[in-house]
Image (tube, rainbow over all chains, first blue to last red; front, side, top):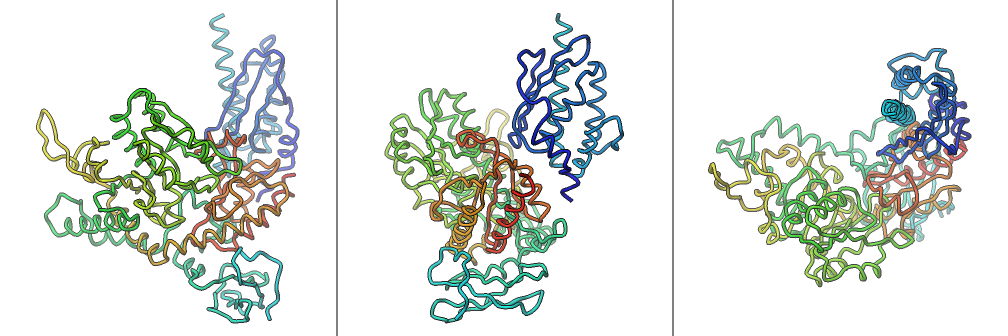
Length: 145
Length: 470
């Protein structure tokens, strides 16, 4: 039962998260916190030519939240900014269990088991919610500029 | 002479363990001998769900609770979780209910349901009598001086909010001091923050000593002439720490200040005598006392309540209402606006009966025995850090702990897969976790129906978790 949730791939991500650390310079920095449990994920992004040029994250959290954040950073690197909102929607649907995993979501499919643990869905969503806020901040800044 | 196994003795003197082969899968009788070889009452061990484990002995002393008989009274304990027997260790969050309490709710709705305090007809009278019976019973349970000192609320949170709003907002002036502790649950912090910001009063904090007990010397330095109220938990919902409430009452009263006690946890773990403690207010929750959710109570000294303005207003708490103004009823009615949670208050009486039958001093003894056992097991698990006092007498059976490099969430899910229910997070005590320097903890908390075997199983699975996640 636990293998369903804690696949090896997730534990690898959590033990050695990708894009871990603080960026020297970031266009946008967002921290997502779970009031329920103390998990906290800080996401930093740099953009260039309409794409995600650099990403970094750090924080403290459970295996699921860290793995989800790590996978997120892999998925958004070099992606066009305008594709990100749809990606976030697709990720949230997968994690909530309202959509089945498909190939386009890569390692994130490993988190599809989370949908069967409603109390842990919140953990998996933390980084994705932070990303959404980061994009809002970024587009907000673009509009002002 | 029974074999002397090296497992713990629960810290109880004069008792040794022995093992016998099982007689049947369903019910095994285990005989326990004390040092002289005398065998007291046989204790039935039905806590395993049919497996080949060796029968474990259960220590008994005279005057002990028959935990296995008690467990039979709680229907939910027969549940399986993911194919394993439920081991419910989240009692600080809420307790399970004996069948008698569940039946009492149904019985009320089937036989005596009516609104209280207002009607003339028979059902209304019966409902009112049943409702007021709980009030009188709770007054006795807490050794209040009269039933009118008991106000029914939705829980401890509302009880504290009531004092903060009705007493705090009215009485406090700029520069007055409200004293809290680093142990407090948010319910005993946030209302006071609001009061402080609205009145100009100042919050001060009693610090913890290193072992999780209250630093009483520091307290002496902080409590002073500006102190108007000390609001303190009697038992921490995270560390299990039992605070020296009577000493704090004395210190408060010497300064002409009041003492409010958050008894949400303590009321379930030990006998409470509000007059002996010397507290002016005491808040508790029925659902942590084997009673229904949605019910709690505030004990308040009558003269204090009589001087307080209402908290919520509307029907049932007035004397006269005209278009221009209204006058208030006397306590406790003054603080019970609207239709209360009648059926659940009535059923709370049954929970109190149940606890009376057990005897709260025996409940405490059982709690201490489990606490001592847990402390011993936890000390033997590598990578496990257990917080709070290391002496069973200084704490209740509530344990926050961390497992190195295993996040409490992951741990909780792992335990859940084995049927073990614990809690993970900050348990509504963020300032405490900040003080401890950790983001989150796992928490196991005991009740009168938990057994030594369940604690041993918890320790076993914690060991497995270490292997799985590291």
